[in-house]
Image 1 (cartoon, rainbow, N blue to C red):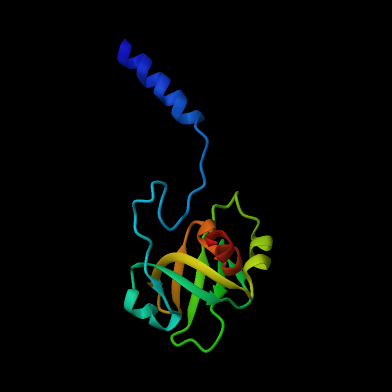
Image 2: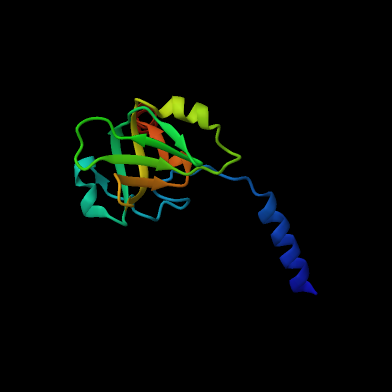
Length: 138
């Protein structure tokens, strides 16, 4: 009986605990080392790995629930930043306007699906404007 009361009380406290925003690089406790920072031309060596990429995006577009930002410039091989956001939490049009043609940081997994290399993330908070990120670190 005592265990049931404890579990119920613990469940209620856990459900009511505020969600604390966290630095997506290091996790909630700061125990995980940030992924390596990689230049766009070197992404091919990191297939399947989690990386941090700083790049200038081109005009973004929306395709089948994904938000795609090509990396601008003469990058070989071609690279795209792909965000697969939770459907209810992101206004796609505002997101595309905010991050198109901007210097950004993104943390994501490098994938190759036969087209351009992709840095794929499912968390929209892992894509940040470079200016915002620099302001936070000061």
